[in-house]
Image 1 (tube, helix red, strand yellow):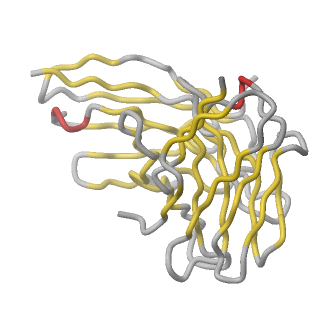
Image 2: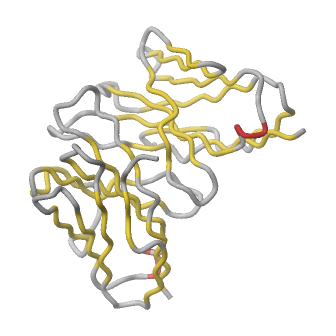
Image 3: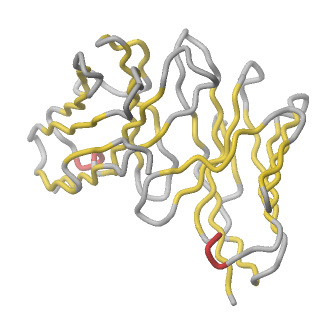
Amino acid sequence: RKEVEQDPGPFNVPEGATVAFNCTYSNSASQSFFWYRQDCRKEPKLLMSVYSSGNEDGRFTAQLNRASQYISLLIRDSKLSDSATYLCVVNPLSGGYNKLIFGAGTRLAVHP
Amino acid sequence: ETGVTQSPTHLIKTRGQQVTLRCSSQSGHNTVSWYQQALGQGPQFIFQYYREEENGRGNFPPRFSGLQFPNYSSELNVNALELDDSALYLCASSLAGGPIDTQYFGPGTRLTVL
């Protein structure tokens, strides 16, 4: 089983739609969680950290369910510029150092 | 932009050759991590350097090695290149002991092995 699993998509949605991505992780001791965004042939960029209480940044809302080892990202009012691959990322904070474990990514295509 | 730079941008090598990739971390960051991203996959952790020492390693063979310099810049060396080494190599800088553990990525080096 992969350490971080995501639906690869692609999700094809019209502008203005609401879309949700889900992610599960296998290491119950994981401490930090993130969503990164990656545009085609570019580096991953931090979209937002994910906290147990849930957090929102404009049109983006992230939720963490530690009991189910489940992370979600909700994008409201999708824009053409939201088209990208969204990477679910977990940091198990084990071994005394930080490493990021990435899912394979979920591709989003927003069309007019 | 993150302030993390990498060189070269692109590189083409043949099987069996050796390659050195370079990374300059964001100002004030003391930790550099390297990742390999194959096409269609998420980045995979190679190793991390802190205070010029390797302090964590992923599931990569010893022919992947690295260095960190006193100015916190870093190199990734790969010996005896194989076709499967073709990938985007990303470095990320962070501040050990800082708030949270956010890693900021450079633009990557795209390596093609023929």
